[in-house]
View 1: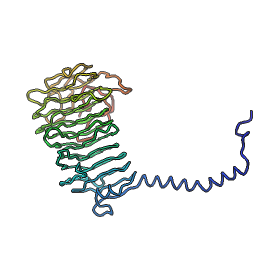
View 2: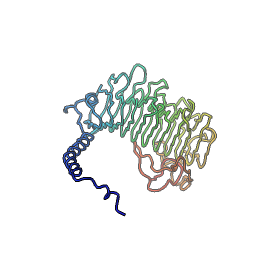
View 3: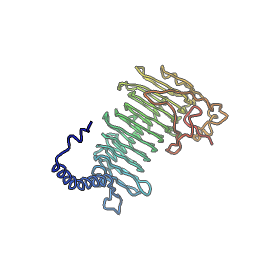
Length: 399
């Protein structure tokens, strides 16, 4: 049978007209595509000797897709509101130190972020203070924010988000320390009722009375971090998942300081369950209680909640099972001398601890395996495991 294409061949004048149209429009189309690519790759240098001298002026001139390369140094009182889409702000030549020096964008913080996606890399945020006691290194109001290799120190909040259910926050290889007003209502990291929080390879310590990490997000991936309050720390919870939601807490070192006023390390659902699904998965964590009178590893508000805790190591008097009903398997309590140098926060197991090879399969949930794939390396990074987890706890590599 002849093809339909051959049976419906167009008249010659139509073919010639189409060829002329393509000949004229193709170059214009290619130029538009190239212009779009160039715009998407627009890189602007920021620094004292550049045309764009400050972060504030960079934010004011930004258009969607811009990348700002900021020269290393101190930027005092240089606060900014970022409201364009797909913006990148990265340090070059060293650290970019953003020191509030009494200034706050819109009375909120060093940076205020709203709009589409944004990535910040290599920036240090310090000194954010405002009259309402919620001055933040970054105030995230909407959009998606990615934070890589940044630090947040001596702010009233390190990062503070809105309660916008469309917001996403992704933090990796970063540090949060000595943040908080001191009233217990401000924290190293304070995440509202957003869609998704991911924190990987980061170091949280010494919150001032508040929590090391507080989240009300619907979905939380807390993976391969160190949340340890250490000597002199006065943090409340080390990890609070205040509104429930789904939480994967895998491969973390979580340690309570000796001077804390709150006995709990991990709290889940304390403010009530506000999301359709409430599931907590604690897998391959090392949980350390330094409180002299004894602390509580896990607090779970009663409700319609799923809890699974597998392959964790505990140092202290309590038991995970005291938190409430759940699937608790293969969790071991060990002494300080089971580790290489616990006094220096080195929680690698000694071979003499007798736990090598004693992991069990934690199973699958929501289409993903509950396994440890990386481990935390201090300070603030992770490394891929060369093989599957060999023993309980967060650290798999030996000397």
